[in-house]
Length: 178
Image 1 (cartoon, one colour):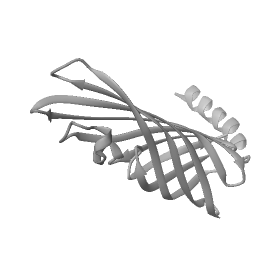
Image 2 (cartoon, one colour):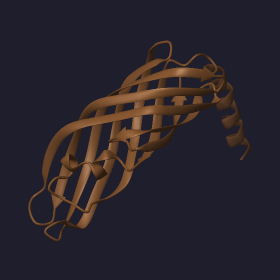
Image 3 (cartoon, one colour):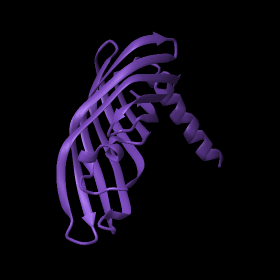
Image 4 (spheres, rainbow, N blue to C red):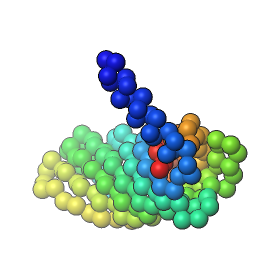
């Protein structure tokens, strides 16, 4: 037990000074509620009455200029219904890959306000119970005019965004910078 505690203490002693430097690269993970796949018929046509649990997002961003971050994100989501088409079961799994831009327009100590937008592709895997599975690729987007980030430590932050797109109308998550 003491040995594990000493390893943890040593790791913290090495990580915290490195994290206190200005971070230029970030990895984030978030959960978004009510993604656009739920409300836009183009993402599930001709199926209907689909239940969607939300979206899990992972993003890798790099700062190329003060307050400007550019990166890639991956989104995973799915929807299903017992009455998806003609009273039959069907499931759709969504995989999104987008290019993202984030601009921080107000920085006050550990709190930052920003806007975020992303565009890319959404690969949809349709799994109907009445025929063979098939795929479809469509346009993916996310527009979040308001985001807030609170940096717990210089290399770690919590964030929340509101907007619309494949990542959800509201999403919360954490960022690790290095």
